[in-house]
Image (cartoon, rainbow, N blue to C red; front, side, top):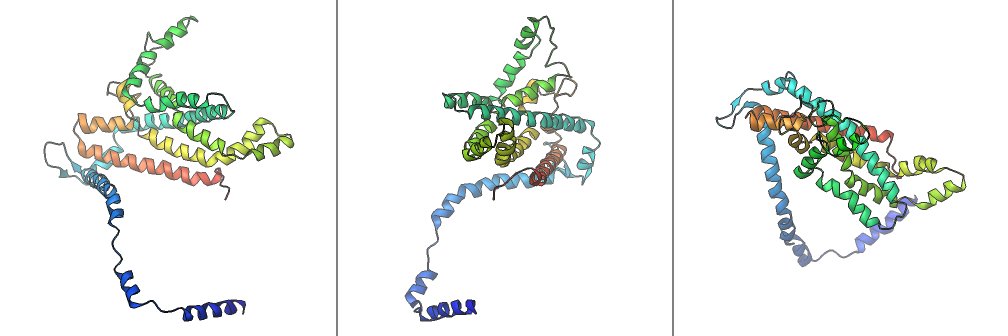
Length: 318
């Protein structure tokens, strides 16, 4: 009854409202097209062409035998079946998964630790933030990888330092058991980007929670575990997804450190590096296209697992 009572005045108001004049209806029909919006969208449409066309071409080439010199010939699923028989694909997947599963957690822990230290109100915070952020801009560059190669060389800084204590350091870069570790350390060193995001999220945690916990006698560790971690867990999840996708596509570090071979003994043969060798050294473009699509599936699977698992540990206030 109450609903009917409120609808009746509204209906009467609508009936009492004068009908729009014919001129007004004509203006509504002849509303000019907002060309400015389409002009601003034009770069996006052009960019999509440069994405969709290669996307479709690589999918087609994945079902062909193509060497860049002769027209592609259709081979069906042969390239995709060969992926599961190729030992180099298996080796490159082991290297890439090891690199991802070790370096991503370590880099996030390092980034969060430095962000917590900087969040304590240090003087000169912008300077420290810039200093720690700089490696993330340079870490993937060829120059830094070359520098890293010199630092961990047989007569590099690390072995010189170990020599002061009477320790003979290994040939870090040329030893298959340590070459990947050098690249993992390099990736952990580039924690600047997630550190800046963590620092911004820590600034958003309300201080009243810490004050209430301190009154109740909670220790710093308890406050971190029960207040800080839950409230920044969406940011941890965000950084985890981005870092996982990025490390699964690692190429430059392995290429420069091994001179493009993935050595020693395949210890730095990343999946993307193997894909490059197949496509641009052996000219197996059809097989390389199939490898690219397998990488897409792997990245999608890792991302899906992260999104499924996040509902068990990520806390959203709303």
